[in-house]
Image (cartoon, rainbow, N blue to C red; front, side, top):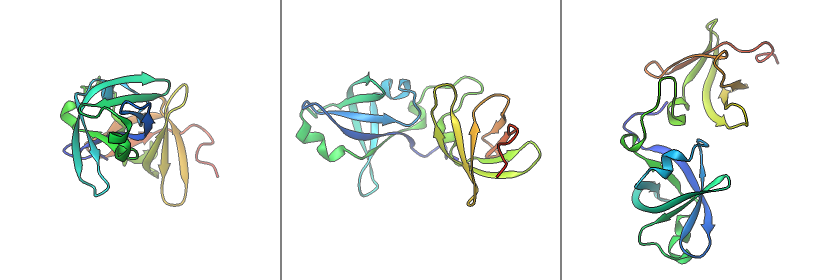
Length: 173
C-alpha cells in the first residue's frame, strides 16, 4: 500500500529513441494521461536518490511513451538515464473519480474473500484487453483476480484491504 507522502512510481525508461535525446518509457499503469500532463518528473538514480527533470515534450508512440527533458538534446546526454524508474508526487497527479484508484494505491493491499479468507497481497497488476488482473501472492500460492465489479467488492485504502468474491474455481488447486 502506498504511503501518500512517498513518490508515486509511474514507469521505467526502457531505451533511447532516435538521436535527439528522446527516451522510450514503459508506463506501468497502461494509462499515458498522467505522464502526458506532467511538467516535471523524478528519476531514481543508481544510488537511490531522486533527481527532478523538466519535461519538454511527451507523446504516445504505439504502446510506449516518448519523453524529452529540457536541456537534453542528443542521445549521448540521455544514455545514463536508461533503466531508471520515473516517479511523481501525489500532488501532481490528477484527482480520480469515485471508485478509481492509482496502481500505487492498490499494490500492497491485503486481499480477503467475502468469507474472510486471506489470499495474500496485491504484488502486480496485469493489463489485459478487457480488464486489469490483480496478481495476489501469499508466499505459497499466486492468485489472478480479475478487476471486475462483481469480483472486487470493496477497496478500503484506509484499512489497506481489498475484499473479493472469487469466481467459482479461482481458488481451487
